[in-house]
Amino acid sequence: MRALRRFFFFLLLLLCQTAWAAKGTILYIPMDNRPVCLDYTVQTMQAAGWDVQTPPSAYIANEKNMGEPEHLFAWLEANVKNSVAVVASSDALLYGGLVASRTHTIPLEVLQKRAERLVALKSNYGDKNIYIFTTIMRSPKASSAPVEPEYYKEWGQKIFRLGELEDKLELKAIKRREIKELADLRAELPLEIQADLYNRRAHNIMATELLLHGVESGDFDYLLIGRDDTAEFSQAHREARSMDILVRELPKERIRFFAGADQLGLVLLSRAANRLQYKLPLVNVTYSAGVGGATVPSYEDNTVADSAKQHIYAAGAFPVRLRRHADLVLAVNTPKNGVTLEAGSAANNGVITPETKNFMRKIERIAQNQPVALADVKYGNGADNALVKGLFENNLAYNLAAYGGWNTAGNSLGFALAQGLLSRDYADGSKKNLLEQRYLDDWAYQANARMLTYTKLIWPNYWPNSGLNAEQCAAAEKFITREINKISAPYLQAAAEKYQFTLPWKRMFEVKVTKVNE
Image (cartoon, rainbow, N blue to C red):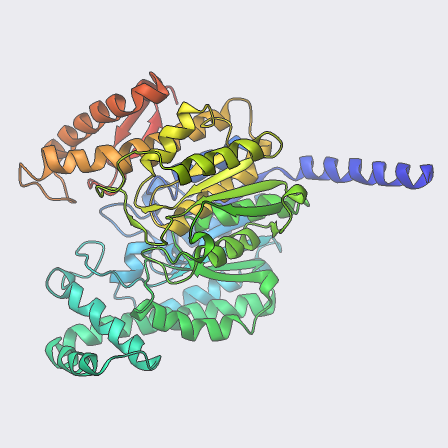
């Protein structure tokens, strides 16, 4: 028995040394330069001790320009031999970014060559670990240029409705009156718009199918496919059903397919970190009272429970039913009735209900013995005011391993999970900084200051929600900074004063929270 114990001790010591030695350079190509995709993701990995290298900013998509696929490929191929892994967005490498995947006019032949070049990366450049994430083109209910083709200004809602009814028709869920509506929409929508829309979607699907060969051949160590902004019935859901048939034929240990887009990069970086260190963390999931895991959030087409399970596998972890076995507990704050309203709605009034109190007590109990990552998905596009207020009032806010509550449920869940898994390796002080960043962004801005800026500055002056000019942007940033300081002061004291708040895409949808001394 003693000899066996010594054997396992030396084996563990060897694995720990190997894990320590494995920390090195990971090449990361984000889908664009938005803070959640680039800055926050890189900062998280750096806090966990990894050297994450990204391409020159000129090659990455921004609010004005598509990225540069050929330059991105050249950078990747020039640097891959000096890395321990690659985590890359195929949307960036094939189209030039997430927005470009919705608006491009790239010939199918070019897309095919780029997809084949990506699949060949492993065999041509040193047999590195290759992790790729991609997205199914979204079906927004209403959107406009430049994040969608120009015609969405006029036809966006009808385009969504057309896809919704086509999906219902295929699923035999369409009502009699909707059949006539579908026929009318097919006749009303200009043929050139339908051709542009469906050709691009078809090309994107064909390019994604080529990437599936990389999973089948083993050229990709993992392929993560996200469904960007979908709905229970939509064109994106229709395409996802077809894609799912193909995905199910491939080995589950190398591919996952679920709702969300902006969290995919960090989820795969977490997977790369776990695999390189020979770790398989165990994760238990718990929910607030009510519908819980059966909730189907807005902007998504699957349940929170299924999303959580799929995210755990994708992040290089394993779900466990018994909490006592878990290395991390993922606590998910869901609406009691399963209906996710917007964070800016009147319902998000900060009143702490008995359900919220009980959920916080559960978190407090668990956090005494195990790290807790909190995914706050009760509302869309922002945090639950009552929950965050309660976390600070009960001294729980900084006892969490991670917190996420910003955009869609998948975005929040994936980010909180990945940061929670990586938190075990954070350098001193890093966890508090990353938590502060999330509270200031997801809660102070998204759930509060954002709507105040709309109602008190943007709309009264008849300014646009996006495409702000330099003067408008500066005024909005000044207003946002003042409001965030005011909102956060009772709970974060003067923490907000250490940060700068900017609108990197000259729009209200996201804010960049940057520590001033960084």
